[in-house]
Length: 209
Image (cartoon, rainbow, N blue to C red; front, side, top):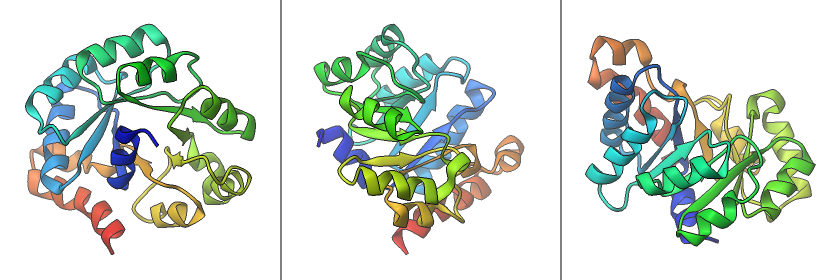
């Protein structure tokens, strides 16, 4: 396995942030780091995402993994690499992204939902296949994919919560991607950092338990 992907799997939970402002995203990331997370995936649908990725890579410890998500073409993937992203994520197959990521020492997570899409992502260089949207099929869908492709690392994303993420792991997930529900948005907007940190830490506590 690609060394960056192996480190990513060791984190167990990937927070996937898609927030309405760069300021909120930055505050959320700081809370996640304080809660103990070793990575965050910042989607490019977040305003000023590229600037945030560059800032994160500059100020976070070298061991912290910065991910760029919702990449839809190779040109954008290259820009994310230049900004300092450690791994590249797409909700779908992006031909050429796997080769580009590996050329620059980055990991690649491309998305698939059907068996054909999962296999295509894997054959095009995805180190881990992002099963998206996971909530549409649930853990039983992931289990069926894992039964067919036991050697393909799967990361369900979309619809994963603190209540069901262990069910996904038992179904065959090697790591889970958790969206904005990992952040207590009302608390974040109210400036209640302690509550945001406590809420996010529940996910890591679930894994450690």
